[in-house]
Image (cartoon, rainbow, N blue to C red; front, side, top):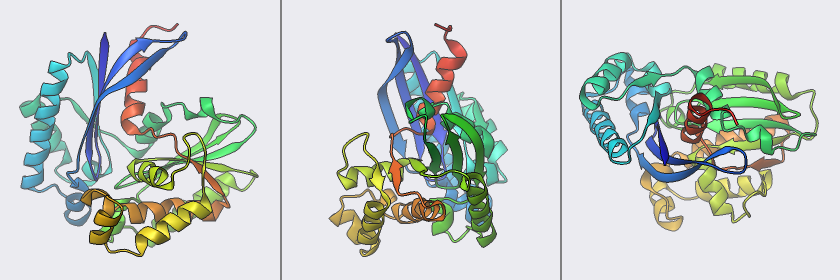
Length: 295
């Protein structure tokens, strides 16, 4: 059996997905075998101090070494390892890439926002969309938000903005970036009626599970707003006990909700679909496109 792996070094967490590749109904498919998430919070260092601290460098190297050992045990044949906005902004990002290569023997790529958006787009969500409807695809991470507009299943615009959950918590989001995002989204959606949103990222996945909506059904703006108000009425400590949230989810879920709600408000979007895919899924899809013969 073929096994591929995806590593995503984000601003909040680091993820490893090991996937089994099979030939399904006239197409290659993957099944998630192992998914590991380590909440390293590299964004706190990168956005506040513009470099990753020695302690967190040590943590990320240990994590990458563990990931490499797991990939070897699972006999992974191909992998892609990406780092996003925290490592992009850290002045010692390139040194960390060299250290990871030397200590863990992993080739890590620090990617730009447009490459991040194209990896997420490799999930080909557009294939499942209503071809007569327009969609705003919103992927919220710790350091950035990727936006893509799909009309008639075709991507018509895509852009990455330095607005993310860790950045907001650390007060490192800038008013002019919010203004730029507002302007961009209004320009690229103003000609389309009846738009829906698609949300990806760990926080919207969690919010969707909390909403008790059925898979495949959209989450309404009203329900999302209600969830946000409910969560926001508790302290972080209370959110951990009342909603059974992990500590590293209980704080970021608030700014994440604010980003989704703000974008929906700006565009008049009333529904958001949550397909529960993200960066690591996109990497696996990309690996399949690059390494498997066309059927």
